[in-house]
Length: 226
Image (tube, rainbow, N blue to C red; front, top):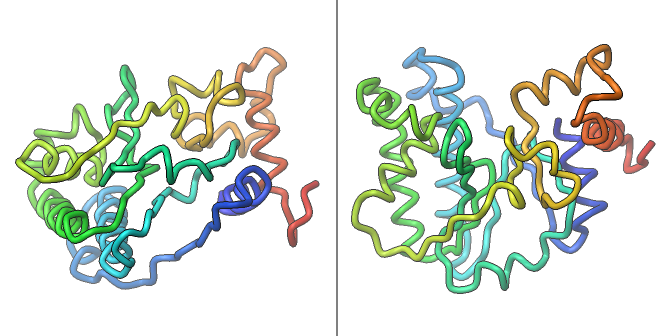
């Protein structure tokens, strides 16, 4: 998955430097809770995104994306696109979950640093409190997204922006049109399993061209696209 992200970003958005960060084997306080692996990793993601925001310089614009993404178009205009916005996240109207935090833009400030600390604290609380998570899960899914939704429902001083996932973070509903208009595609679920199983390819598959593009980027070796 990571090769596809790195090589697609280099080809399609060369003006936006991509830094890949791997989470070390830490967070023992989270891992020892022994919950569902997805929930554990979701909570770790929230914590480490928070750490990145805390360490960033005030005024800096960060785009935090999952590693299972494909960059299809230039992202260099994001600086102007989210001007005056503290936090921008993608939504999927009609999707399985309303918010998808595979793509988040954050303008670093003391406000957003405080917001992220509270977001991370809520995520950990949800990991420990299944009843609290269940209350939000049906609409927002994973703990990272549920914790964000809960924090946004409370009073805050942020100026936020909902980005249409069709263009910024194409998931299930938007995969068939992703090559036409999406800037980034989220490789998950049925699409992910189909990418890894060529036997499932069919000329009638509406995702076939997208699969071919992902495989081309994933095959990148030492900067050479095959």
